[in-house]
Length: 109
Image 1 (cartoon, rainbow, N blue to C red):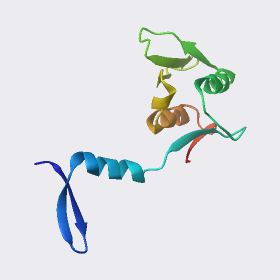
Image 2: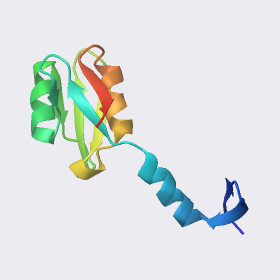
Image 3: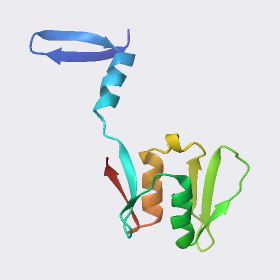
Image 4: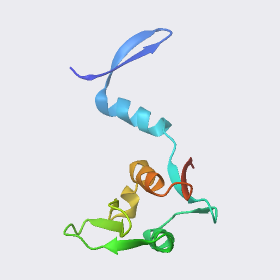
């Protein structure tokens, strides 16, 4: 039996794992990537690519067609993003922030 124990004033019970995950996910806030210089929320890969190219990043056409990738000639860093923008999560956002300090910020929506 797997799941999450939920404790309330009147007792406790074991909740199914799927229902517990739904409760945890619904309480999380959506994150957005913000370009600090313009205050713009990055809402598409085309706007992100424009900003990254101004910072010296170039598109890298690797072997995986499911990824958008960017590299900088002056470093060994590589930014890999899912091709589908709807799968652009905070993990990818923080990767961009770390590789571009003082340029981007991740905020709650």
